[in-house]
Image 1: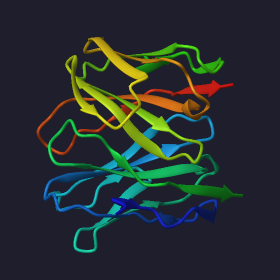
Image 2: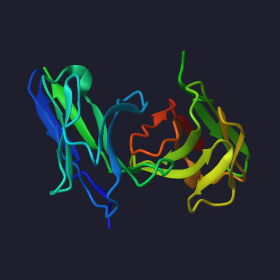
Image 3: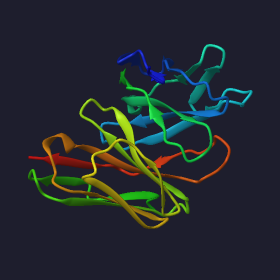
Length: 115
Length: 115
């Protein structure tokens, strides 16, 4: 069974609009972390935002926010006021349990922002 | 100022050859990782070292051998390269902590092409 599911292979949005990239996860571990990474066409993996399973508030980092719904096991990334430079592949990932375990990645969503 | 660096960025080689990829981090982190990104962009953990000790060793052909001379360096040696080894290999590092806030920072990736 997939531990991280990203159901949107591609998303299209216009500049200045908000967009939500979906991510659901599956774990029985009470302690876990959820991460979003951006991979532009240049290929590097850029860390965007993190949410811990015990965090009460949704994480925010500038134009990025993570809509964490624990009961639904979802951790959607919201990008407000999209910019052309946001066009990239976005990966949701999870780390279970104690530090030192690896990230488990979803298959990614390609976001295209148009002017 | 590069946090996680990898060399080389591109590697083109013939089947059957042996090659190495080097990774260095200057973040003072204790844990380093190798991930493989396949042609469909799927990322999967291969190995992880914590302070020179191997802690994750996924089901990877034993032609792949990681080596960590110190906690700032993690190299990946691949023997008898095969066509299926063509991929992008990412090195990452994180600070080993007990909490789930163990963000992993990635290097720029090494694109390996086996002809």
